[in-house]
Image (tube, rainbow, N blue to C red; front, side, top):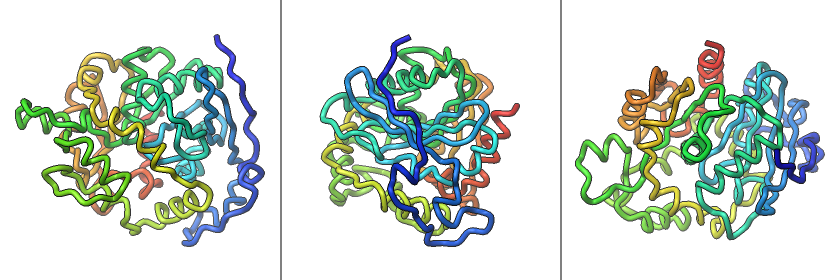
Length: 318
């Protein structure tokens, strides 16, 4: 097994250099970051010499989260509080996101999948549960395509379309099954990275609208925490988006997933149909569909960490 240069995890407070008070009080949850004493941050260096950060807490079976595009471990603070009671929880800040290094190379889903493999090797994870949200699910599909499911106990995917880009010769059924919502990746990317306006024919999603809704105190607090410590640079963060948008993972989903799988989506997700399709082709997959009252949009795990943590734990314990 290859050995990577690493910095052992240490207290998150010592890494960040200051405490953080969450703006909204939530009964039974930490008031300040220091109330979550077990939270740590570690670092390791990949085989192409990129330093990646990761967040870790708890003891037990390892559970690895791969965040979505532009997301990071700070956003997972409540999920880590809740799930670290049962698992050794890791959240990887992928390259160009969170506390990880900004680089202008390796900005492909396949390279991030290799980073994930090297991360597991760095932690000596013989077997682990893996959960990918949004682009993080695509990273897991690339990982499975390249390396199979050896080393995977159970899988969870949160609301990622198997293909973002809609090919011009697809039928409407193919588009729905794939969850495809753009015919112009370049225009879609500009709307994400430069906030350029687009109509629903160019980018048929309300994900940016859902991202700005602060109706969940958990989400509002986690976002405030992340924004207090992390500066996103879209000149780096946006580099992976074209590759992410133009991959079609339906063949992997149909033929290569042989580990127990949970799929999470919501009634207000733009990709619910595609998540139902995924559940129909992955053997014995479990599908969880959240209602509007349960914050059933693309950000369901961050907006409703109590329900998501309970559902995920119940699935992993089967």
